[in-house]
Length: 249
Image (tube, rainbow, N blue to C red):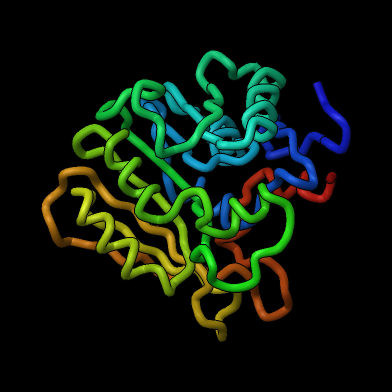
């Protein structure tokens, strides 16, 4: 089941995911999986899924009816496939290896209730681009950009379906403008701060396909850490049973 330099990471509630040095996950991923607030009847897609952390987190309790994780690198897609097999959820969770911009005929458009994506944060050419190819793709908009994510998400969603993304605060205006461009109305926003005295480092945004304009709900800011470096009570709740095994890498 495991290949060289891979290991199982316990996510809690008996679910384990295969990760490696090249394909792993961060707190942002866990926050987005929680923010997306999936429902048991949902048909869902996670774009730019990496090793499939968001879909695997959804498997912990009341998994969606049907889930696809789309990843451009074969290695990541294969890790998700094996994680699904290991956890006995292959009947509802499938990996799709491919470019998110080329999903026509691969996944049905206008079909899904929920699309999520933790997209590349940095503009292509913005900042120092160094490291392995998969790291560049994960961090920089070299192979897909924010508009690609939102336009593809809009195509996949059925009417009133939800698109949930996370991004850096400086991209918030871009994200909202692009959602409206593709008929996905921003409906729920939450900022994330590392500590109470720090500026927000992340936003979580949900839009609804075909919804009327207006009525954006801005949720209370999520604080990650107390002054002493420990998780806040809400972060403990979000991490849930994952935190009990989080040190077992």
